[in-house]
View 1: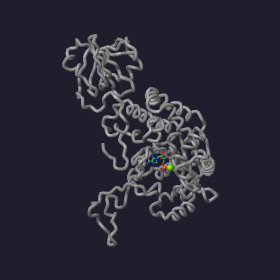
View 2: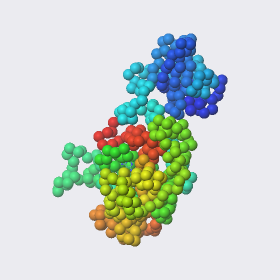
View 3: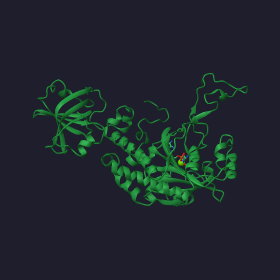
View 4: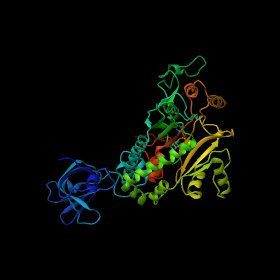
Length: 463
Ligand code: 4AD
Ligand code: MG
C-alpha cells in the first residue's frame, strides 16, 4: 500500500479507506478497555495521528505494548472519526510494524526541554514540535523567496563561495587554503607564498555575493543570490552566526527609494506567504514560544514601513530619555538596543533608516552630495533590529576609485568591480537579507542558533 503523509490525512481525511503511515511514536498510552493509543508524528506537519492498537493484534504483547517514544513504525488500518475529544480522526490499526526500536534512554521524553539543551542534540531536535515547526517554516520561507523573485522578473545567480575579494571590506573572512599550515612555503622575505596555494592566490569563504551579483545586475537587469555566507566575527549574540544564508537582490537603474520599496514589498510578501502555508506551525509557535507572534507578523504585513534618515534617528534616540547601555552619537553605528527602541517603542512597526555616515559605511555605497553620508539603508524590525542592509551603489568610476584609495584597499583586487563603472555604468541598488534573521522573525524562536539546522558560531561546529 502507498504510504500517506499525516498532513494530507488530517487535511482531508479519506474516512473509511485503508491507509498506511510511517513515522515516529511520540507517546503510548494503554487503556484498560483493551487497546493502546499511539501518537505518531511523521514530520509532515505539527499534528500527530492518533492510532488505536487493540490488544488482539498478533504482536501486541511482544511489540506494541513495548513501544516507547522515538520508535519508528509503519501502521496500516482504517481512518475513522474519532470518538474521543482532541482530534477529529484516528487510525484503527490493522497492522503495526516496528521499523526501529528506541529505548528509555531516548533523550526526547514527553516533557519540555530547553532550546539550549536541544541544541546539544542537533541530530534529534527536529523531532520536537518546536524545532519541527521552525524548520518547516524555514523551508516555506526559502520557497517563498524564490517564488517572489521569479514572479517579479528576477534571475537567480549562483555567486561563488570561494572568493579572493572581501565584499564588505571588513576583514572578517575565513581563509581557504590547501597549504601545509605547519610549514607553509615562504617567499624570500619570510611571508607566506600564496602563489603555491591551490588557487595561486589568497582565498577565503565569501561574506556576501553582492559584488558578483552587481556584475549580473549590470547585464541581466534584475538578479538575486541566495546562498551561504561566512563571517569570522567573534559575536556571541542571539542574532549572529558564523555561517548563514543571505538573500541579495541587485537591480540595475534602481535608486535608494526603489530599493527600499522593493525590500518592503518583498518582506511583506514572503511573510504573508508563510502565514498561509504554515498556519498550524505559526499557531503553535504563537501559543508556546512567542505570544503575539502572529499579530506582530500581521502588523508588518499590513502597516506601511516608516522611513527615516540615520540623522533623524539619532535625534530621536537622543531625545528619548532612555538610558541605553551604549551612548548614541552621530557617526557611531547604532546598537541593537537603539534599533529596537525605534521600531518597538517609538514607532511600533518596521522602519527603514537611510543615509548613514560615510565613515561607518561599506566602500561601495554611493556618496551623497553632502560628502558626509552615503545612500545606505537598513530595515529594522521589532524583536530583531537590523534584518536587511543595503544601499544604492557608487556607480561613478572616479568617486569609487578615490574611496578605495582612501580606505587603503587594493585597486588590483577590485579591478573588475571598477571596470563595471567604466563600461556602461548606471545607477543601481540592492540589499542583503540574513535568511536566519528572517526565520527568527517569522518564528519568534528567540535565538538565531535555533533558526538554522546546524548552527556555526565561535567554538561550535559539531554535527
Ligand atoms: O548588512 P550586511 O553586512 O550587508 C551586506 O553584506 C551587503 N553586501 C548586502 C547587500 O547589499 N547585498 O549583511 C546583510 C544582512 C544583515 O542585515 C543581516 O540580516 C545579515 O545579513 N547578517 C547576519 N546574519 C546572521 N549572522 C551574521 N553574522 C550576520 N551578518 C549579517
Ligand atoms: Mg549591516
